[in-house]
Amino acid sequence: MRTTKQIISIIQDYMDNVPVDRVREYLSRSYLGLINSNSSQNVFYIDNEQPLPILKTTTGDRKYAISAANLVDADDVQIVLEQDGITVSARKVRSLFIEKTGLQGRSYRLNDYVPVGVPSNYFNWYKERSFSKVPFQSYNQRGSQPATVILFDDYDTDIYVEFYYTPGDLLTNLDEMLIDTDDWTDALVDGAVGYYEDLINGESKRLDKYNSYWKRKYLNVGMDNLGDKVPNQFKARPLG
Image 1: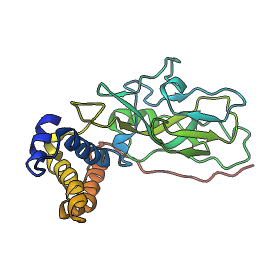
Image 2: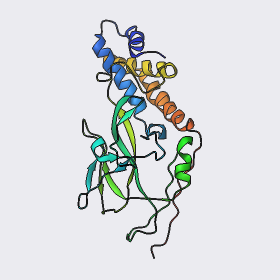
Image 3: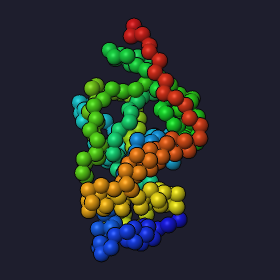
Image 4: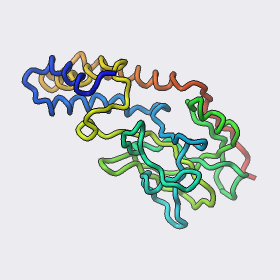
């Protein structure tokens, strides 16, 4: 698989006299533009029988950062936010849900929940249970502040968290990318060179292709490679 250094070398062929640190910045922008898609393949899972983190909550508190300090597994062990050995953070929350045990005394309507694109190795965990979505307000990651949720109620049961992860930029993680670089070299080069050409010329066909073709293809492939998949199911249930 091509290394970051090898891809930078390819990009430098199109950027005469541009310092290597600046080339790395363009590559980082291209890389993050691909991987920060809302693909089910980029949902954070634990390599465990229970694949999703649980949110640590305190009675009366409603606002929580989706950080390692606030996430545990089924054994109440703090989660390590890593993907393939690379530190990641919570970019955007997709869903919060609880295991369903009736209407829980809530005044809002509860729905059956099964996420789109469940990886095959976690399929049975979802299939054998019944879940209800938890209503919440959220803020996406902003700078070093990870995604944050605000709950509308207190809960006396585990709240599972689905969130899209993002790695650090390539100025932080210097050598590795959470992407198959052999498959996506052309996309990474088009994005990096395209951003440079757009800055110099005010337009770039490479950047147009990156935005209209490569980003869409990466998202579609991320959804297609998940093995067994089930659709979202929202079955309305009566309140009484």
